[in-house]
Image (cartoon, rainbow, N blue to C red; front, side):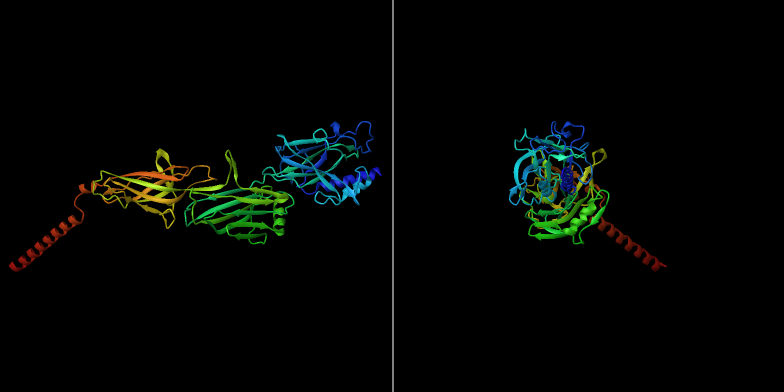
Length: 507
């Protein structure tokens, strides 16, 4: 009887271990007194009156690795676990744990399928700074010998363990009853991220979003990425859906029937199915850095009044884990964002006369950086912008309008320019390049830096043009000078012809 019960217990312990999402369950080290038989009680006899204890060690690590120790793994603070006490039942009657019948029931029981057994929530506990929490009768008076279901609750951006069963007491490798146990549920960081590339974006053009969702180890039964676009955006194209790993490279997932892609109004989703689960699990076994990466473009149809386009993607994972791509900051969680601003170029015509019209100057906007000697150097192509706030046209040049009053002032306006975005580590810098000056004035030859204020909403550049007084000092080589030269040439030609005619006549 004793050997049969011990064998059943051993089988039950193996059954409870389950997939890699389950914790590693094992007794405390044999050198510790908790593993010794209870004094005065035969080692082969289960004593239900003895106090029991359970220590949960939540660690951050790859659940796929078969490490049965917490050594060297960082503990997860404030991980939360629900503990339920299980009453074994058969034909409607309770079954005592210290019976052969109890372990027959346990042999086929799983955390997901309790059979006739009844579960009652005992408590919810949180791990401390080391990632450990211990439950005893001293901490919870009803924590006595019995069967318990442990369910990890979501409390961070790491994978949670699959629910599992623990039997207290249990047997050690020598078949002795021990009354304390440790469980080691490991979790990997599965925080998804989202980035935006706003290059060339303005009303009528596109933003590019990229979502990266880590693939958890173990059995995958849920994997869904969803995104709700804010008003003013519309899906332009899905550029790629791929499994990208640290060692396995990039695997295209878009044309293999691994998921269902849905677009419903502003809501986008990629819901993986069984063939997709199998493919992800296959790739994850050999690459712990595996992520599903989705890149898509959205058309900017309008920009909110505050000038900021925000976006959050959501990821659903096994065991009810739900995460989003917002980033935690000192002021709370922040979504992926792009800020748009409007440009004003103030042109001053130095020495302007009251009747001068200082209109028609033209400007381009560039991203730029300050080079050696403090000179500003433009990068790439002109930044597109709108010529009105509502985005009627996309332009690369804007023209100045005289401000009147003979003050020698004109302004050029550009709208809906992306000035900063959430995943950029540095502030964007812009320069204005003048491509045409008002009539009678000289063009400013250097890129002029743009001042950005009001959280990226206001861009200002002040440029001065000077009168083109040099032209009046040049020789008369304009239209009037050319006319005089032509007339002189005609007179000389006529004189030559007359002289030739006279000489022939005399001869």
